[in-house]
Length: 219
Image (tube, rainbow, N blue to C red; front, side, top):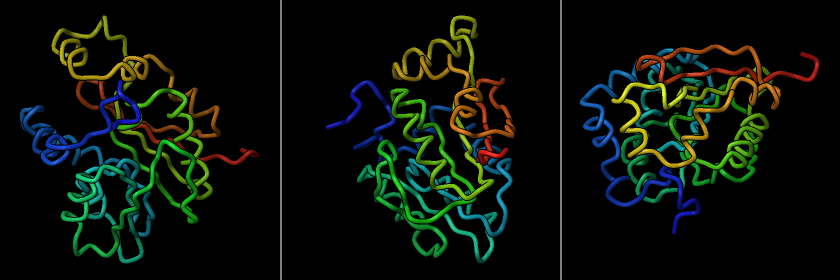
């Protein structure tokens, strides 16, 4: 049973089994190019230790691993049984990629610190109180000066968006996404002691990759 019945980020069954294919088909083949470009823009260093929240099928982890050297590694977090199966199949043989079956919607301490935390099209699907829990956990698990990278919807007024944006959003997205696009995410992240924002937009500015640096109290 899903913990958040009004959400669509808890993907199970056939949707999880064919998730990557569904994304490619739904985007008319544009998703592959988009996600490649988005991950390339993160600025991954060869020695980075990256936390991949809501890691899904491992597709993003594999894309990020291309930029890592011998000391870099990726730790994914995922709880869907079908997604976990796909992740392990895809990343088999990659010694620098591992998976933890740990929930991201509850406070967590992984006992290690990361240079980057990446979350892609997941955080919009939670109630706002859960999003705040995720942000707090990310802050705690990042190294000083580490970066939180959110790839998700940009802020926009849905009623002013073109029809080809409004219709699929209203049909396909959960109620939490409507709340997500109305919030000022730089302001929210600032309240959790993140700053030095860098952003890159895609899909006519409706999608954004937002990087936020973990600040210390003295900064």
